[in-house]
Length: 311
Image (cartoon, rainbow, N blue to C red; front, top):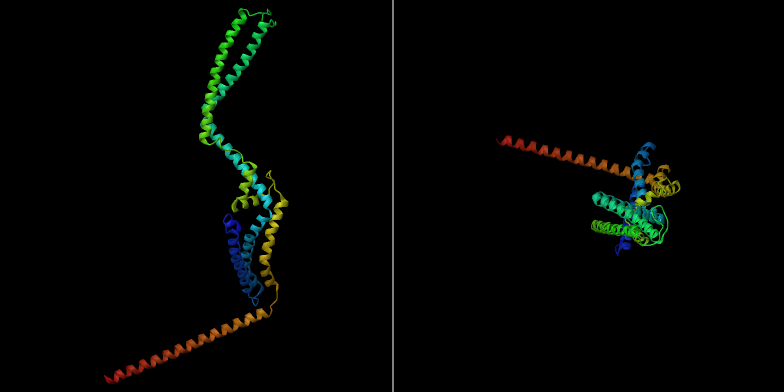
């Protein structure tokens, strides 16, 4: 009941009120279940009478044990909820990225191609700049003369480098333009605002988690984070539920196993007296109806006779 009204200022008061109502309802239902078993009947008939009541007790035990399990495993549930929220957020981000990549496939392909051309040209310019320095400072290689100075070959190389640097500037500008377009599209589609939850955000989400999320997390405690079965936790949860089911079924089992006592004899006597009284009331009503009927018949006969004599 507290989970139902959680977040309301009167949550505690409502939980106590409706908890008392629920407790009284269960108390009276159990009392009726036990008292309605007829101990004067045969064993098979008593078991037949108790079967639907046992099934009802099992359902009640399951219902009232769940909130207690949620409270007992509160820490483990919060940890599992954090993992679940992180996985869901990661899956959401991956889905958005996949949809974005598919939507802007041409633009992204063009961006990657332009980046590859830019990086390739940067590497080529770096190599050519090194060769030009070797030529100017007289470092002998297979592609340099080894004569120090700023000669025709060095001038030609420098002119080629300037042209390539202009081309590199053009490619860099195209890359920045495409990146700006992609970033704007990401901002418009909401990818820039979707991030993994921080520790503070996860704590806040687990504190306001509803019954459905907590119940799901409790069910997941039977498995570890790798998805493998965790028998220890699963058995602990199961035994708590079985304990409440046993408590709910115990009054019925005790009633079935006990012999007839003074109370059962008293109930049987009261029922016998009530049946006898009902039978006598029936006989009384029958006799009254018969007497009234005979009187009506006699009156009708006398009335007809009188009519015949007068005519």
